[in-house]
Length: 221
Length: 331
Image (cartoon, rainbow over all chains, first blue to last red; front, side, top):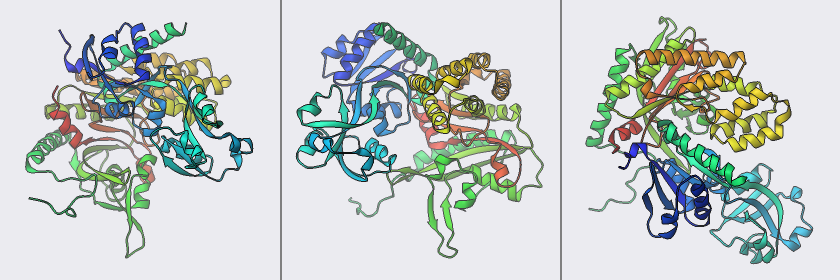
């Protein structure tokens, strides 16, 4: 018999690459995601594990669902969390989707550039809030050009001199003739939790955090 | 029928039609009846205040959310109140000094808060303030018990009052031999229960921090849930101020237990909400299925002093609309 909703945790999972990595982690914690991975049209999965209900949504939407309590918990990248500045708990670093956010620019510019002399720069990025904060903290005026993808194109076509974006291996930057000039921060995916859910279902939340934490520790070994 | 486009409302405010207004009234009158039973007397405070006066009694995060204008006749900056508590503090300190303490006051008013993105939000509040010569766990307990009784009276099921203590946290953080920036980072990590960031900050700042302090910090993010966490925390600290806070909290819990209301209570020693504003216990009400708190409050012993009257105080307020939506949820 299914548990009543008030005893169930609804978990928002992000579509795409992170979902596959999350599946490995949940498998190590005894939850099989093969039904979620095999059916791309279905959005809600109720019968995968006792007391857990999963929903699969766009990664940028995860913090919103969790903040409003439509989902109790979720998996979200630190980049998305910082950009959206939602009021959520982040009880576990899942160590998946690991990458870095950096400032990059064309190689020719990078050769003679000195970030400590910047006073006013133009930057293309998917992350206007993080970018603004990063440069404000250094006292640099920044003109931000918000883009939704293919950020590396911006300097090539003269849209901006620099970009702020995620890098994993640095291969994409290299292919587009860009070099990294400044580290903004390290990024990874977090298990996030709605405040009211943690307060009203503390045991269920703790159980899940513990079992994923243990699975993580086993996978590291 | 089409409505002319310019006949619209600013973001964040709304009309409440008879059907909904009826539900709100029911919730408000239930809560006020319980307040009255406990001897709380209602006061009515003005919509406008001078910013400089109100600022004496506002927490830092609220100061950024005040709607202001310059009064053309005096050139002074006037605020639309974002919170009633500083008003009550002002009223008590300036108009009610000859009333005997303890003073039990309540209110039912709307406040306006700037939300960012050029939006405001009007909030309907019902709150209570208990002002006494000195702080006491009995006063803290009375407020929590009264909040639970009010929620039961209006027929809300499945809610929790979550209790923390910023006095305890302040003592724990205060003894760390780290600089101001790192202390802020540690506090921010605790605020979101982010143990891994906490670990890396402690690794970096690390050497001077005692082993038991480090263990306590790393455990704070998990010290939520049932009352046993108070004992666990107590066993990890020897700091006298931290111990005092925990013993006050234990007495509050005892009083709630005596009333057989512990089913409605959870503890969270890692809660840092209102850290700069409150001085002792803090609490918030949550209903399952509603993402936002339905009430919040705590002890603020420094507030009245700022208006020139050195009294202790503890209080809380319901967010009426969140409470009504908690009543309506389908669970």
